[in-house]
Image 1: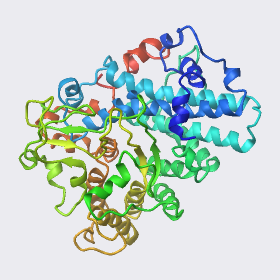
Image 2: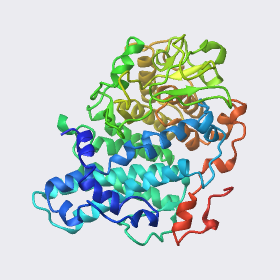
Image 3: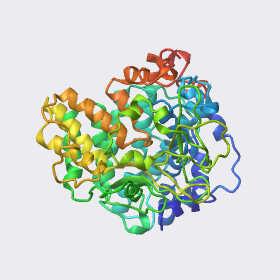
Image 4: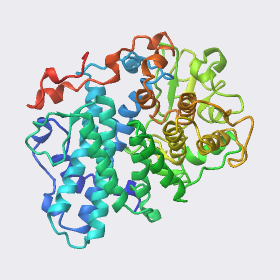
Length: 498
């Protein structure tokens, strides 16, 4: 059964239990009286029940709080190539007060929904014998839960810094203080290493979308990169590269990128871990995005249409750095007149990387990590570890560049390849720009700016609308509801400046 169908089927059964027991971090969420909820014993007494409960951990990632909108949307709105208007303008101006439940509160809540569901599944699997669940399946399911918990914490620690490290199911006592970032990262690494050891390399076609060993290794390489643990990041990325499981999708014309991002794509050769969306309410994400000059942008709905003016007259500095032969912008930027609906003004740039011509919600899968990123992780980490880019680092970076130009990835190309002789810092700077081009609208740019220490410099240079960014904006505020409901926290625990 496809994991989308697993998740959808949980709404009235095992998921109901998970929603009750692991709905977030506020005490109010636990005061709801159960109606049709199943007991823990009912859910965790069978093989089918525990598999369904494990599948339920994935669902918050699909929903609005995380990749469905708020997390992904704010990561992009905070970056240097997106502006928002209307209800989205505050994020572009870095107005992220702790009472802004629609932003920091929902993202925090979504992350802990994943964590609490994972904790419940782990606890139940470790504390009971379940008919039909042998040691191998038990460890696989725990591996999935720990992988997803690690992914949620990886987002939270980068956005908020020190966060409560919850590792047990929480039903009454939420009085847990903030743990240092180092402890959170230690747990993330431990969870991912467990996943590496217990998750399968691949799943049957009917179960595409579940976390694999290579997903754990790939995210782990990214964690090491974030921590500037260059040798470990390069070594872990190299394991994935040398596994032989993945390859770049061939591209010769811009439309070929839809073999990766298209709504009808089931899987492809560079997919490592994606959220498998379906045209089911609550399991899609908003794929169309807008770039506008400061103070006048707007994030369109899934089916909105507008007239798009001349692209060139509105190009920001970031977009101007896109090379002429690069095919990527032709796939993910609309340019030209379209029918006018909903908007009365000219709209300069609309991103179309993820597009679905069918009805709402869209069916595009969302790539959490793909093989392209692993190649670039290795290239960056290897260059930084060796204090200069090696031939191998150049080659992996250039493979991504050649593909972007529609060239053969294994043939040196003077137009596509980066020049030799770069220092390690110059190489990292070039990679930062290349990652911006390759992963536009994939929720990575803000994190890349944070980990390289370039956020204030780059964002302020992107336009007047972003000039107000401050040091405090590098760590988001702890939501007011968490401070109010968590007896181990007070306002003195709030991030600096908030």
